[in-house]
Length: 271
Image 1 (cartoon, helix red, strand yellow):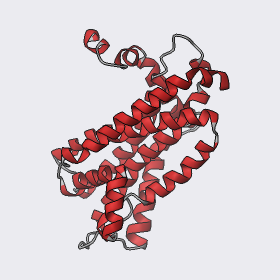
Image 2: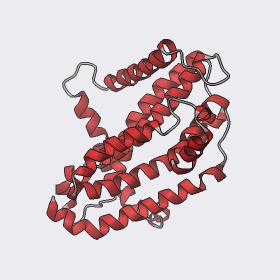
Image 3: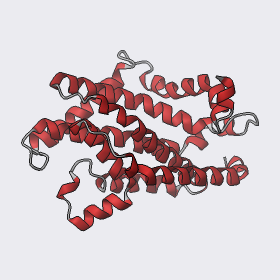
Image 4: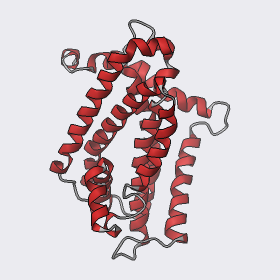
């Protein structure tokens, strides 16, 4: 097992420090629930409240429906799937912005594997994502709308999504050490990005030119659409449609790694 791991780039330090990664990833949630009576139950309640809020607002109050359907539950599933997965994506980027500054002392240790820091972000946000997904899964089971084996198709989509998120987060996090405006601006960018992604609305309601732009230039459009196809139609997305996403993730990671490697000494001095 160890022999195989050592041959995979970056895998050996991640495997060796796996206990540290898990400990650091869960520390944030423990701190959030410290001195509270309900403890770890709070993230579950927060997830349930968020899902209930969106379903009540858009489905019951605004009477939103998918085009050609009178089934309110279909739109509720459409909405929740998009919001839950987008939250994992956007929170990973936002959390990565300050990961280097918050771990300045660790970065200055010669033997510390720096690659573990972004993985800690992915895992910590993944725990919260799993809680939200679990709450949503209970809703699907209760309503009898749980997808079949196509649900496994979410795994490669999540890997692609989070590869893009953490690569972009590493790059922006490095730049944020020197230019604090990056951290302020990315929140605004993510807000616009959210509304340019078919999460609250279906892609079909947009004018053809706008829909084409959103599909071709927004990598999250096809990913979110893939989730929708799985949850609503029990249909696996076409792998060929995500080749560009894999290339984008690889390019972003290479750029983030090169940028951090090149500026590492300056990052240490600046921190």
